[in-house]
Length: 100
Image 1 (cartoon, rainbow, N blue to C red):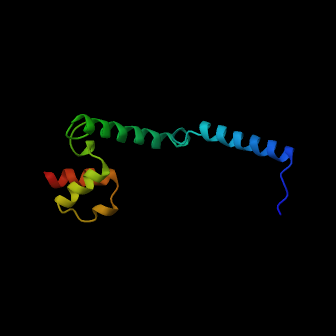
Image 2 (cartoon, helix red, strand yellow):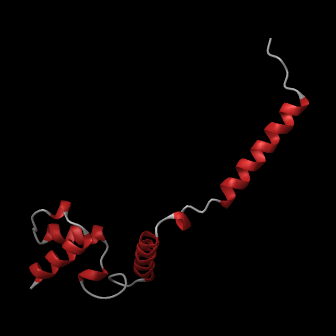
């Protein structure tokens, strides 16, 4: 038979649950990210919103307006070697050069 929790233990448990809930509500994970990351997320969100509104390519023009996924697809279509290891800037440069 298990012993019953005391009144004090039940109060402490309730207090701990309340603290944990408050902490979870206060935690804003995006605001804890580095500034560069937050800005990049904002740009990607803007591009996604623009596409949803019907824009053909995010915000801006050309390869720079594409997301990394879109750039990789375009690089595959253009048969660019090493595209899976490239970052966004490298993909933009490679796609732009191959299109010329």
